[in-house]
Length: 350
Length: 269
Image 1 (cartoon, each protein chain N blue to C red):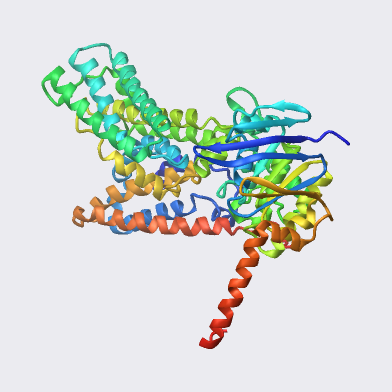
Image 2: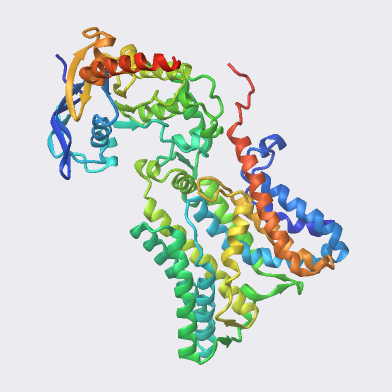
């Protein structure tokens, strides 16, 4: 079983450069998130017992983490850049309904439904970005508006076109294998997608100049613009990314569950923000890491699913999450303060 | 007389209804420090905004190296070799020294999809450039900017400006938020930049700091240039009086003396 656990922890480790000393780790944004993940894992390993540690238990939280993670990563990038995206819930619903209607209700080829669904996500994201950058209205308000607007649009159009709010789809084996299969009968293929997204986003944030731009825009928008960073284009691109992430999960869910409902996805709105904040990203922007977001996502998923293995009333899950969020943010603040008081490593004070 | 690097002739700026600046003429030479003195609201900020491309002047001309120029944007200004460093360094608190030094101009290595930001090089250069300005305590390019002292942050911003080719450096109240020791650090850095042949415009309301490093001084009052003189031509008292608006000061002194006289009877000294 231990092999299983270390195996499943691999996506979390993606992107860390190995060989950092423990002391240095505490100066990184993900330090608190790592402790949080380990903490809740040990907690539920003790109180959840063998069922939690068995592969079915592992799959339960890993599946939740994977779907949430694919959305939380691009949402996290946006938050590092100082913007919020609340619209992901409705983008997910709109894209999964698009796919179910096109490929299920109308019977068009599966690939067309997938492309159109992703197109809906990308378009919605770009629209969010355009409105935020053109109007200077806070992104909280803009994406709150698109969250509601798109939910209504999805419901209305679905009812007009199909007369119902839930549409079935019969995916072909090919798309089932790529998006909606269960590996070993338990693990969603979405886990692999999550790893791919985490590696891609991690590479971009940590290793490329665009990552530097994202940190700079979130840190001080005016200075970033003065330094020649195309802040508006960058933000539009990031919104497009979160739209794409939400649509990808929409496609995955539609194929996995053989259909879509207009109410799908709304839980992702706050869960993605929780995962990102628990992952050490500063809500006001300018600080955060992909490794942290991955740990934050894992922490959320473990608490979300672990409660069912304790034998306690699951009514308490939200309470635990609430306490956890507060604790995580306080811990992250402490680590951030530590990082800011980080004296020269060589230790020689002149 | 050599050509000034930057020359303003009769520059004015009016916002709806009010003249923020009128007929400002200034010259800044390479390797010299021009101190722009003035009280709050004297028009220093407006002048800085014109020189950093955020405002267009409503009248007058600006020449860089003898060529008349019109600044269209902050980016445009940096193309002319002019850089402005703001009070808190305008830097990114939660980014590393190396990362923030190269924001917008990141050095890369590798090719194609593997092209990546060379953070090692960025950190090295940032540390080296800060050390060339006499900041020896910063040795790790991975340190967060927020962990630097106020003076070190100024040094980082100045080093960045000079490294990227600024030969006209506008420092907006760089010592205002600093303690005595940190402020002397910044003054030393100004002298270092001057020695490198940079033309420095040092904006301040601290006469003492200005007199320590300035070659040339201009005093702004209510959007006009009230005085313009070289090092050694005025005493500190004269400048202070002028800045505070001599008469107003004399009035205040009389008023305070009267207050003191009446306060003496209440027992509060």
